Image 1 (cartoon, one colour):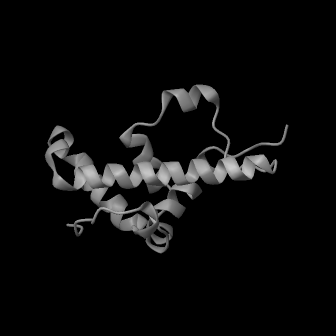
Image 2 (tube, one colour):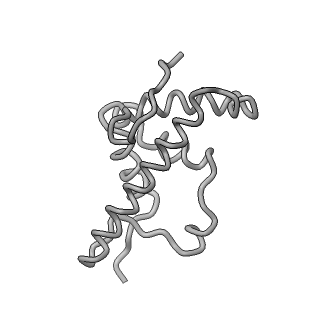
Image 3 (cartoon, one colour):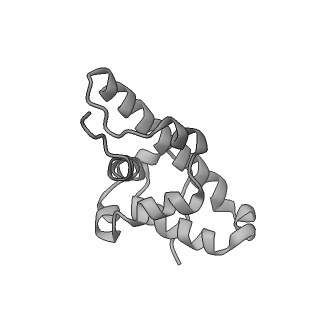
Length: 117
């Protein structure tokens, strides 16, 4: 069983620790809502998302976006299962070396690459 994660910014959370705990919580289904770790993990993921959006916005201003999500996909959003699949696709070795913030940005780059038009 993974160690509980302390609340904090995504830049201080190990991506593998976050992922393994999130997978454990997802297996609980509805009961995960009552797990004391869920709220802090949700905040950490929101922080990672905000950080990625800021980095992408800054890069987009220079004409080199880091990732490109269609408006339709952006409006639809991502489910917990989709987020876990994206983080899972990075592999344990990669996740273990990255913070949640960096891992999420990498996952977005891989899932939504920008193609030259």
